Length: 145
Length: 92
Image (cartoon, rainbow over all chains, first blue to last red; front, side, top):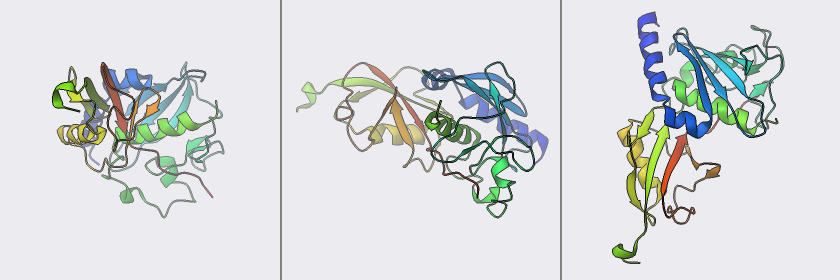
């Protein structure tokens, strides 16, 4: 993916995440400068977290996600939910907790899923950048505080 | 119930692809199915494949195939959060 095209797709995606949506979801956009989008998730009785979404190569390759605390420090563990999307084991490539869900770079590069390539999802409904972040947010919502 | 007796409410749909209407609210009768508004929003925001998406107002998940009234909304302005459900996960 040419960087200029990737940047254009990123900027278009970020534009869709407006103030009304952020208010409804209690999201905070901390940074949105290509290729990094950093979004905070908040909820009642939950510790606020951020995800750092690295979008280099978007949408030829899926975004990579890191978990941060509210101050922007990397988390060594992430809340666990019933769906198994949030994984606290060390990812083989990053050594960090990761999102084990289609549409996330760490899923497609994990040895358990290398046969399930990003191209199976690219362009499908719910797999644009906003849709992927929405899916991660829903997994976090269902996770234990 | 006659048209004159219908209650109306204002409704807007927010997604990660934008808000519809861009400002203000659509005036909808409370007996109208939520799905009709969601489909219109999807069309206006150029979204496809939204049939199994989740629609919520606050913490309440809507049954899109029921009316606003059946979902408990008959007045005022509501903002519907509309987006995809999460995929399954897990590594072997």
